[in-house]
Amino acid sequence: MDNMDTPLGDLIMRLATVRSPIVMLLVLTAAAAAEPNALVGYLKDPRAIRGCTWSAWIPSKSLSSARIGEGFIFLADRDDSRALMNIGGKDVTLAVEGAFSRLPVRGEVLSRTYRAPGIEVRAEYTTTDDCSKSNNEACEVSTYSVRFEVQQGGQTQVVSAIGTVGC
Image 1 (cartoon, one colour):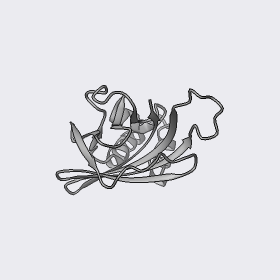
Image 2 (cartoon, one colour):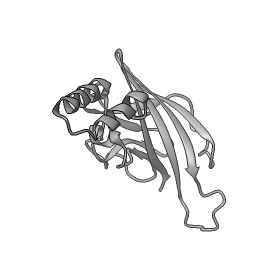
Image 3 (cartoon, helix red, strand yellow):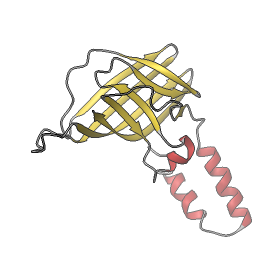
């Protein structure tokens, strides 16, 4: 959930339209207070995993994109044998818990937990489109929305993103 999608966020956005220096100072102070310390960043090497992959990024219209940056925030081999996420300013290799089974079809939710020493990432992928009902034999990509909950030490960040899985 984006920090601006809250009652406080709504108030900040409404007050931002007022052109008073005092109100602007209050808006900036409230926005800074609503901003958690970011754990998640964009991958330094967006080509670290090639071929058939899972990839996720922040939609550009989201307020989160200004805080995180541009590019992929998550990459993984299609079989989940290797996953990468930038956490705490470093590209971290994550191991998935459990075995890969199958790609979900439209409307299904896939929950995954990834780990690295001192880090836990819980992901909920909701498939938004897939090739299961496509007449196009070349269809190889499914799309999804994903909610990542990233924990490192005592810090937690929730990031909503979109992505694709395929070749």
